[in-house]
Image (cartoon, rainbow, N blue to C red; front, side):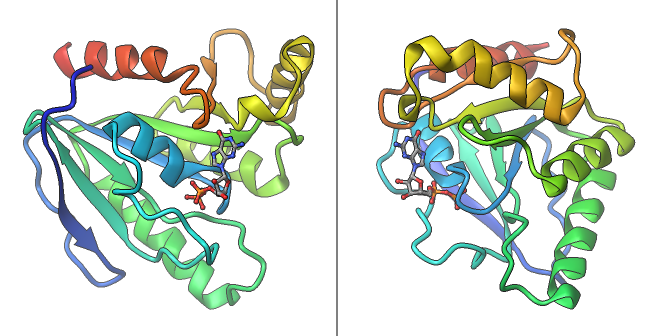
Length: 195
Ligand code: GDP
């Protein structure tokens, strides 16, 4: 995909109204520090347009990035950050739920999982919850460069087993360092945006 323009068009807080966009939307979610900003930057061909967090768990907004005036990347708040109060976590949950419920242009939800680790209870809950909301998430297994090539299949299997998913669910290994996997994600986005 050729990225011509990128614009952070809307930032939604807990009390904001979700924008009624008329172009396809692609949402990204995952545990904080999983590499979500790095993935979004890579998919925008930018180094640091989406903020790379030095303070995990700080993003409490849903950010809508207009890409080429053709589609949106939707950056959902990261979850699972231990230091965040329960009540704040519940508010984020409501915010994400509200978005998933009220977004007819949402084509695909990407759930990011660190390829090195077994999915956490939070990851599994998030996966099940996205499915419950009526979407089939695509899994992006991040930080691919951190494991040996010979270990990739083993780790993907651990991710699949941990989430309880079968071969019908797409898992794309990705590295923000080498950009491996980026073309596959772009292709999926382009196909889905144009269908
Ligand atoms: P977020 O909190 O999910 O948005 O995660 P970030 O994109 O801010 O990344 C968290 C940390 O992981 C940062 O130090 C990144 O540089 C690092 N990181 C993210 N993706 C990769 C990757 O693919 N490979 C490596 N080696 N590090 C990564």
